[in-house]
Length: 81
Figure 1 (cartoon, rainbow, N blue to C red):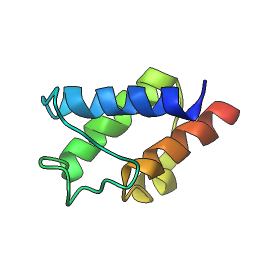
Figure 2 (cartoon, helix red, strand yellow; figure 1 turned 135 degrees about the vertical axis):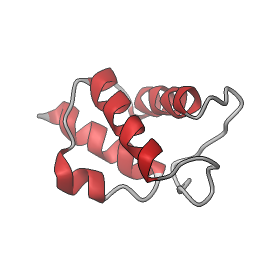
Figure 3 (cartoon, helix red, strand yellow; figure 1 turned 180 degrees about the vertical axis):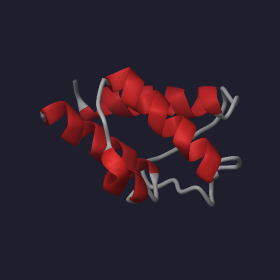
């Protein structure tokens, strides 16, 4: 799976969880820039991403998420295992 394919799926997860099909995110998007991405929603995003890609992030990984690219990095790392 390419990085672009992973990003598309992550974007779809954000759109689904935040209930905004028009939501545009980039790799550098942060919770401060995305309306509704708070700590509670972050947990939903993590669970959905882990389920979609069949990976586990671990507590340290989850705590390291500060932008969309961190989610992508964790998925790539999980897929390499």
